[in-house]
Image 1 (cartoon, rainbow over the protein chains, first blue to last red):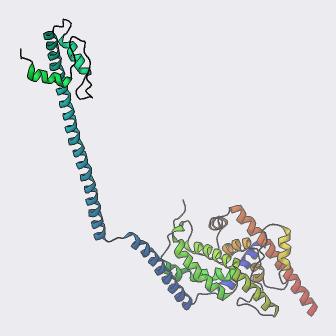
Image 2: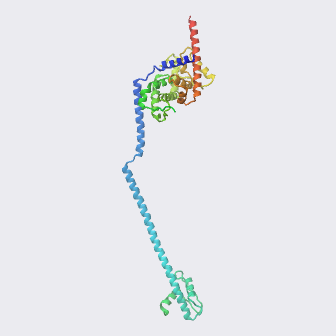
Length: 171
Length: 199
């Protein structure tokens, strides 16, 4: 019974659906529409491509421009660094030279003061004490006239130089 | 390990399976003009969905499955609903569609339950044809019946194509056949009564 009903259903499908055929016109229309859809899809894909495909000449010029720009920046940085190094070197050298001069002057003047003290009859005067006094009265700082013990009298550091240079006899 | 199927070029698909696709569209939509519109949409969809073909079933059944989905989308669309109501109005004046059936849209209620069966039989003409009864089946039953009796596929293949379990296929076929055989018995009784009355 079941098999017979199955057969009946199969026959029903064959009879009702088997008689339906797609006409050539329908197939042709479908193929035409498919071609249109396909070309529309290709166009949309091509649009995407044009967005990414840039003229190689443009890329080359762009790269060259960027290279020039970055070279300029590098050159500028290098020049700035060189300038800073040279400037710094000169400054340091001048500083060192100034320090050197100051210490030389200090020692010499200390000795001079000590000599002057000996000459004037002070027994406690020594070159070290003289230089210590002069270091305190650094000529590069504000030179303030100082009052020495009465037996030494007033002196000025600059005056001391002058004493050394002109008045004192060389030993 | 099952056999692997390859999909031919779209033009070749149209040439080879045009009849099958049109038949499926006719089966679901019941009207030739609508079926021809859906037919074109099926192949447009095929172009777009070519990459999704897994190769686990012959292209014919893959196309039938796409056609089924396209037709269901047609029936769900607002346009088809309005056209349907217009056709129903025509039927009231005694017109019939191209397929010769009086009802083209099946019962779209839930698959299970006695209520569905009652609604199904209420919607049928007791003296109508078996084809009308098949067309009036709920969508889930129509799918399995199509692949079983038109596609001549076994439960396993139907399950794979429709994406449901084999036991679901079996139960749906069983229920659909039960409803159809009940319709057939009722139709026989009605024709016998008519014969006796004529005598």
